[in-house]
Amino acid sequence: MNEENNNYEKQEDENNLIAQRREKLNSIRMKRGAFPNSFKKESKAVELVSAYSGKEKVELEELAVQAKVAGRIIRMRGPFVVISDEGTQIQLYMNKKSYSEAMADELKSLDLGDIIGVKGQVFKTNQDELTVRVMEFELLTKSLRPLPDKYKGLTDTEMRYRRRYLDLIVNEDSRSVFKIRSRIIRFIRHYFEELGFMEVETPMMQVIPGGATARPFITHHNALDQDMYLRVAPELYLKRLVVGGFEKVFELNRNFRNEGLSTRHNPEFTMLEFYQAYARYDDLMDLTEDLFRSIAQTVIGSTSISYQGSEYDFSQPFSRLTVHNAIESYCGLHSADLVSKVAAIATASKLDVSIDESWSLGKIVMEIFEQKVESQLDQPTFITEYPIEVSPLARRKEGQPEVTDRFELIIGGRELANGFSELNDPEDQAERFLEQAAQKNSGDNEAMHYDSDYITALEYGLPPTAGEGIGIDRLVMLFTNTPSIKDVLLFPHMRPQQNSD
RNA sequence: GGGCCGUUAGCUCAGUCGGUAGAGCAGUUGGCUUUUAACCAAUUGGUCGUGCGUUCGAAUCGCACACGGCCCA
Image (cartoon, rainbow, N blue to C red; front, side, top):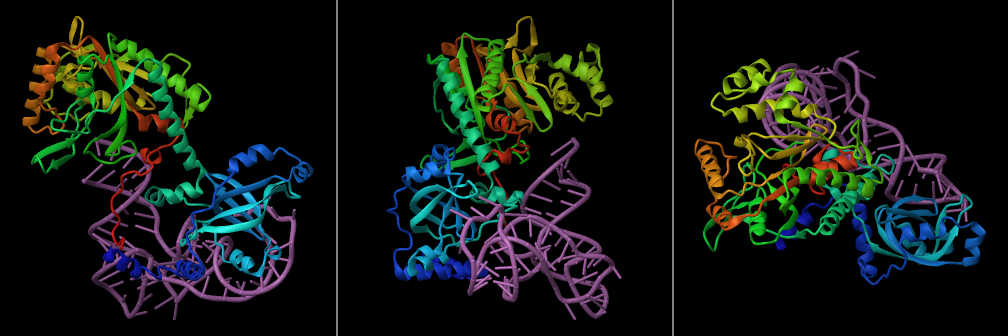
């Protein structure tokens, strides 16, 4: 505490503007409690606007409505002060000539950014602007730091991410993105509950990280002297619940992956995963189409949306293509070009896709797909028949054991969802885990661990089940037309700044 | 990991050929007081991202580093 105070003392004189405001705060402290908390807000700006902005000036004079509102001062022009109350602006009329000398001094010392509470009568100005004629006002919180430019706002992307609160004060667009995010998440919960799914919470700290091929974060539990991992996916726990008889479950929460940052990747991100017993992967494709259509309809208000220059109409069925068909049609190939490992290596080299010749056929095929096809898939497309080697938890396709009953949904060249019929054969699963463990031993730190408790669960019997994960951040990017995952995360991960003291 | 671009006042940005740092906004003082990016007058404010180098002299040229953005892998 002492140390903090010392630092606080030291950072005085950051600049004149802040020093001047500190002076003002000090003189307030001399007179009274500088941070009063007894003001009761009786109206929201948004309520006043919706109730009275349609009324005529004379009507309002007759009604003589009294209002008690509070908010942050974001504009001052002469006797007019505009406050922002939860993003809604309302104008106040505060003419110092109509106050006592003491109150006039108080008014004069108000700054942009201060939070005030006021009481007065609602009226309309000659310019037809709804306004509160302030009879009494009280400074509730002094703002020591000046707000960004009143016209240009805060445009520096780094500052917008690092000081999100400032971004939210001055950029209504940014507020809107996070309101839509919240509505989407609320809608998804409602949607799954209506379908009879139960929301559950499974461990975020796991002894064996499973459910996805990704590098985990490692932490340590001191009392047990045990290394633990932040989960890369909840999948294996959710399927244990299906074994336990919770046949329709979903979890909507954070996953953690120890990988780089990009416009599509943040180390912690939000994932929806859901599992339904007695369903197949094609049932989930139908559900996914309906989910996207419903989100667009309910949250955005239209089944058509535009995203970074593309238009997507979710009232239309999504196209469905196998991995092989997609590569063939987007790279101008024939089925013979991917039929064997030798052929696939030659094809990769022809397409200038860098691969490792020790990789399996399936992995080479997927590398070609990811490098040459995925980014070209603009309109919503389900890609199916993923190779078994890259799908260690998915059921084999009937009569075609080298591929799985799996799909991914690609929109705008990005993976939005990944689902499959679950592998419920414990012996096949054990072999797949062994294969993953072998890859891990040979240096692939994204490969899965062998999870023997999960095998035990499967041995008790997992009913035929289908499951899916949907990346919520990317989904929100799509519906808010934002180019970077940082735009839809309130506090995206940033490198620490130097000289921050 | 590689390439390109950016970093100058609280915010948004100029800064010519290397020659002693500029504007608007906000801030301060005064005026005006039913304005709409309010207006009028005066005025304060800078470790030019950090470090090293070249030079008589560096915001400007060179090198390295940091952070951010975009593109590629």
